Length: 128
Length: 128
DNA sequence: CTTGACCTTCCAGTGACTGGAACCCTTATC
DNA sequence: GATAAGGGTTCCAGTCACTGGAAGGTCAAG
Image (cartoon, rainbow over all chains, first blue to last red; front, side):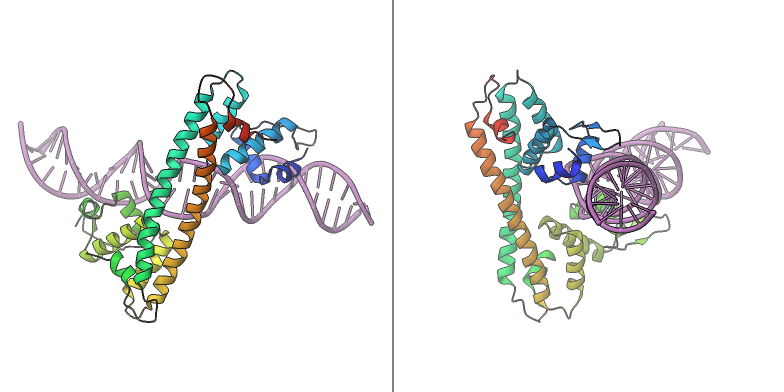
């Protein structure tokens, strides 16, 4: 399989696939012409990576998850621990964004949004 | 005022203040010794920037907001428009993170987290 | 034989800083 | 006057996970 077929099947851009090879997440062989040759195992791994990334896991988490996936003697506790930690960070991020959104929403409501210069948003940013 | 005093008063690290100068957000004079000399106006602008960044505005948005702030003939509608657009992006990001969190939370609940290898989290990531 | 769609590598850029090295200036103390 | 601590300065590299683009090799169809 060539890279564009893998791209189509996994939804990952070719650039991303090459990048994943560069950082050692997949290691496809090369054909006589220098093209990467992907096997089903690579396809499978890349799809795994795509889904893990879609859940927001960092590349390093993905590397660990992939290693755990390949390790028959893994403990599910290890996977769960990574996922829990990640979920915690997501929730913290959500809280932070929500706080921003609340503040912004309030300021926006207070702003007339007309052609006069008075603006509670700027007033708040400039508060002394 | 020297940079560390400005840092103390604004809460911005000196590195960040230098960076803001580099990209033209503030333009302090220099003393005979080459040190940056900050006036109250700079302090004020930097505090403004700190608060705008804390609300998640991009540097380019901050640049625009600062320009609007300094423009007596501004229309509050312009400020409101920037804020609205930003709020929209925040809300989109929250929705995306919330969706991740929901999926992750479900998978975590389903995972025994013991020393056996069976793991619904990995199964989901590896689904065919 | 040419065209167009592939593939390759390599380099640079993204955003908003952050860390570190190497070096200069100021102030206080000995 | 030497020295040491604690400022300040510049410049370069690194972060994260790609993404864009240039320059060039390969392949299949007409």
